[in-house]
Each structure stands twice: as C-alpha cells, then as structure tokens.
Length: 407
Image (cartoon, rainbow, N blue to C red; front, side):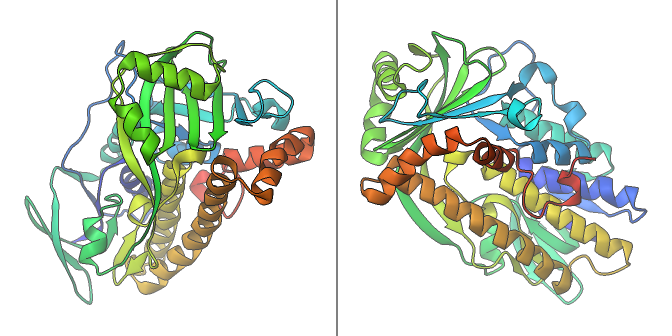
C-alpha cells in the first residue's frame, strides 16, 4: 500500500509529490508516493521558441520549488526574471504618474518573480519527484472506494491502494466527483486569450497590465525578448478577436495596449479558455484531499492560480510528513481538517480580492469603481503602500508553509 497517491501530474500535483518524496526522506519518515499522470511532457528543447502557455512564479513559489528539488532543474536560459510591474487603468497613460509601478528594488529584492513555460516547470518537478524515489505511473484515474484504512483506486493500468488520495486533476476533477465533493461555479462571462507576441519596444523585464471597461490585458516578459499576452476579454469581444486575422488581431492588440510596448506582431497561435471561478465548499473527504484547481480556480488577472496551488501542495505535504514522523496515519481526518482550515481561509481572501479588482478596475462604472481606479495613483505616491503590495506580489505574506520560507 502507498502512503499517498496523487492524481494529476501538472505543476501542482507534481510539486506535492516531489515535496512529499524529499521531505519524507529528510525527516527519516520515508513515504511511499505514487503519482498518476497519463501524459508526461518532455522539457522544451534548447533553441525553440517559448510555449504560449506560461506561468508567473512568485518568490514564495521559488523557495518551495527549491525545497522540492526542482529549481536546479529549471533551465535558466528559458526563464525570465521580471523586476517591475506596471499597472494602469485605460483612463490614464501607461507611463504617467497615475500608473502604478512596483519595483523589486523598493523592497531590496533582485526581482518580483519569474515567467517560465508551464511545460518546463512540470517537467522539472516530475524529474525531481522520480529522482527522490517517487513512483510515476502513466495511468488515468477511473474510480475509488474508500475504506477504514485506505483508498482502493482503479486506474487504466490496474488497481492500487493508498492511505491518502490527493486530487490534483484540475477544474474538471474526476477525484472530486468520485469523492462526492461539490464545486460552486461562477461565470465571469469572459474568455482568456493567450499568445506570444513580438513588440516594437523592449519589455524592460517588466510585467505590464492594463485594466479596461471590457477586460484586462497583460504582457508578461519572456526570455527571448518576446512577451506572452493574457487578454481576459468579455465574451462578445473575445469571439471577434479569435476569428480575426493575425494582422487584424495585432491591430486590436495595439489599441488595447495603447502601444505601451509599441506595435505588436503575433508569433504564435492564439489559444483561449473560458473564465470561471470555482470554489469547492469542502477541500477534503474521508481519506481524500483536493489541491490546486481541483479545489479552487480564480481569475488569472493577478497571475496567482499556480502560486496558490503550489502553496496548497506545500501545506498538505508539510502536514502529511509531520504526521508520518509521529507515526500517525497521513490520511487521518485530523491531518485533512488542518489542511482545509489552513488553505481555505487563505484562498477565500485572495479570491475575494481578485474578484474585486476585476469588478471595480476592469468593469466598474460607479463611484466606488472610480475611487478604485484613482486608488492606483494614490498607492503609487505612497512608498509604504507600494511596499505592502510588493510583498503581497512576492507571496511572502500570510501563513506560509515551511517549504516556501526563505532559508
């Protein structure tokens, strides 16, 4: 019997697996961990253009990736550290004093985080997991049966048993459904369009974000000088943008960005996905825990989705390893309830804040919205307020797991 079985080998599931394998061995409580992932990606080859699908990694996430043994495996040439963030409302110019600018130097940090390809992050974490003695199974989850001492799991390659089952299989989580856990969905009526673009001017190692009445547009700096865009557009606008020619799309992008980085040119295909908020009322069931998108999905405007999931992984791993070191059952309700209390409160605060940004800065028209829009300039004029928000962006506030703290 395995101590922990994890379904879903994306960055969040792979991170939980790697942390369990590494931390369990370090504390003398070696855990048997199996990870089910039907499609294992190869890391990006040197010299190829960046993937369109990228993630923003905070400082807290950097440290927990170090704890998981994955950071040295992330190829430095394909990572772009960003030193600044520039955020502005469409009613002001990007380079005006009314735009909000965060600079890592203001808090004595070398950067605010990193932009890297999702595939690179996933491959590094999976490699770290197997190097630490974890078992990777190229299999799909089919069903489960929960007993007093463990979970029986049917997979496409046969049955297995574990004392704890972790669902890290995304917003459409099969584990969540099989465990009888519900999920509340809220439709933002927006579509996220992602693509890689070349820009006339340098991205200046800066993440750029413009709030508009019909959505939010972000430019994320990439290692080769190009930028990844995430355009969260109202559905009616997004439909036209996706059907437009590459040249017409670039023209619309130029207007939406107010040419903050000069003229743009598509250098990848466009991809899209509908934006919905997901919140599972319960993160746990008997011998089952949900992490990442299986438990919660937030709007991408703050770039916090993956970071929140990685912190879920680290929090659960910390509690499971501590229980194993005490020779306690890692799948006990005491462990799972402690995890749920810890992460559910943190997610609720972040999710509410992100929704408020979308509602007031991108779509708001009333007095409260105008107050929020003017608030960007007020924050920019206060060094203390800027430092507060920079620390939030770094992910170094709140109740952090041990793996995410600077050693």
